[in-house]
Image (cartoon, rainbow, N blue to C red; front, side, top):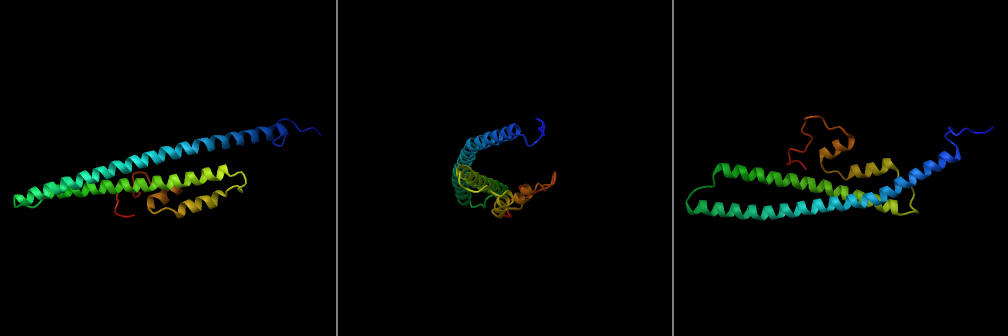
Length: 162
């Protein structure tokens, strides 16, 4: 009996599927390092900018405090509140940096896996479980499981709870 060309097990279709898989693998091997470099660059520049802002803010706060002491006054309550809000914003950026670092590490791991022709194929469930085990924040777990609730604070607005 001759198999029809529409049969899923024909050599032509198997060859096309293999070629598609090879092309996807090649794309992934070339694309992931680019993504990794972009994430690393964004994180590095962000960390540097925040570090510079923290130094400038500490100096500004010291100058205001010194000026208030010279005048025999306490730092205005509004200034203290603004200082607290600014520090929370920096803490939020730190959370973003931690999340980007985790993505960098996982992309590096995947690139290494793809480049090792002798490595056994990775198990997706084990890979995802290992990634989940690296999470430090509830919003990471929610994002991983796609359980974020529309309009809800999924941990991204309150930087106090790491």
